[in-house]
Length: 156
View 1 (cartoon, rainbow, N blue to C red):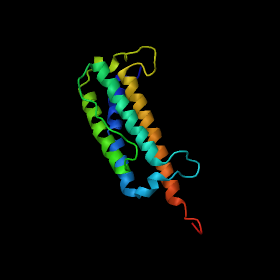
View 2: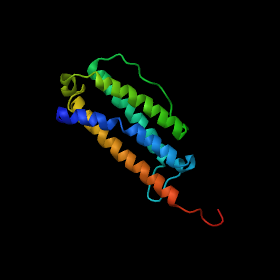
View 3: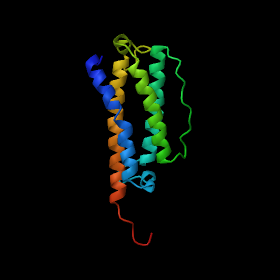
View 4: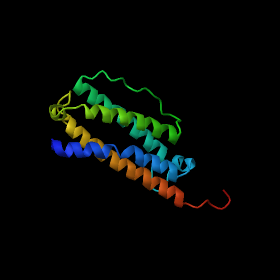
């Protein structure tokens, strides 16, 4: 299980993902989000949509541990613009962070329902979310940078 003090630090790291995504929106034109860069299997918009879906699952797991009646934010992400996806992610992450702020140390150390599956506690779930955010942000950035660096081909 992740150390509880480390977990609190990681919760702060989770708060940085939405502002980083907003920066990417400002730095890269919308069209860059839909193109897959060389060596990238998925465009940045698809990676962003997966981040939104993962955040919904993260919040659902937290609510299950806390038996919290917080509402699940509905949404469909097919065809959503990058700006809409970032706004949706930001809304979800804000709700997730509020939920984590209400967790006690005991709840952070509590085993997740379902047993046996990793991550095994809320603190482990937070650590996994930070790792997933870091990896996905790096992939989005690499894809956007690659697309931005590509020159239009002659005759296209």
